[in-house]
Figure (cartoon, rainbow, N blue to C red):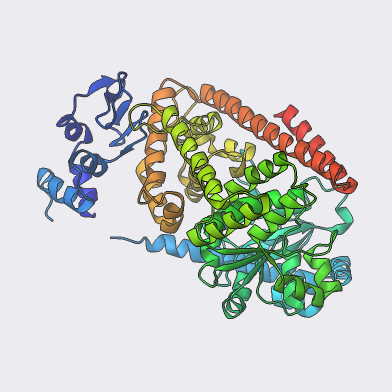
Length: 623
């Protein structure tokens, strides 16, 4: 046992905190006025069972050490030295079993990739798939190079193959290659009758798959044209760029990465000799992906489909890259083309387009001023309104000054006035946030959706027997809040990894709480320090664990008297609200995109969006 763990095992947190503030009983827990911010109603809670504390007012929380560090203004080492004598402790680390499990999952993914590859190249049933790929220009050497495969239309062939190699049902499930039937111990293949693209991490290890539907079933397939592996212990989609393992040396040598949207875009680019191309797999660039890119280059060229939808997909990543002072450029290709078709039909034109990629600010200036009558003052004012917030996000002050000067020349306004306007807007925003915040250093009000998602997680922590039901009802992407999403993702992985040891009490006797210490310890080993640092740069990476403490206490506070049936009913209501709110938000976005597409005269895009809108409307009604 580490000294810090030994101290916590010997010191009761209630006795420790009682030395500093007055605690009053509140059921099985204790309440107090928070010592870290002014409040009239007690919102500070201490759990003797969990040996944790949390304030629902200011959001602070943690264990013995975090409390003493806050009260005394100490570092962790100083708090350790302070508490050690009180606990009678005189002043271990990695779990080899966990490392072994990770390696087993990687072995499963590698074996699966080989199995799919052999099915595509050797199985007669895959003949039509090979013809389709050949028609798309995917030759045998490309199939070999990327290990493209085919998942036959079978419920259990892969599972049987993997079990013959010595892997267990639960390991196959944890790798994301099978699905567990709700309420039963049976498993079946996740991917059936699909073209399989292995997704590799930066070290070249297969960690997931992107699966394209058989082209012959494209019109009738209900699960979507592409489906991907779920989040697992070895796969986090926010930290993966397709093809980076093959492209990293070319990126480093050329000092540039070209980011496309789809896997076929990247594969075609490499086949034509453009080796510095990676794919974001249709999502906006994340902080984690940008951190990976910065290992090799500071210069990014985005070759997204820059229609309205493409612009929206790119914006979030662009903002993050600008804050990180990365050189972001936009590759412009012929209208109606995507990188896949353009590279195949005009590789010389593609090379020229990449070479002449506009800086992101040039691109925005071009969009804003295209067809604009600059003689009208209202148009100049509108141009400033659109561009100043973008210029404000530029991390480098010299570059920021350059674009303020450019804007000033365009709209015949001095750079000083524009800078004052930009700074005034920033100050107004800060002032608004300050006025809206409580007088004490209390955290900003939460979004209602995030509050609902916290109740959802609190219920699962209090009644872990409902996790399997929840997983089959709502996926990680639908849960608002990045931290809530991370807790849910890791809760699922932890639950699945210990699934055989979970038991459900008889109806009416309640459900024992999740093994809090076990899950928290597991989380500490599996949450990437860089992920914590990226999301919580001012919190030293502790926010996930503070949130976990809060959720456990929230569950005990709000669902203390609930039985299993009441908990399941409440969970069903929360899931319905989360789904409806998500679908409604997405429908609003689609409606706006339809309007944009119609104005641009893109009827095909508008029709596709209307079909998606109808599907979302049906799902919203059924939620």
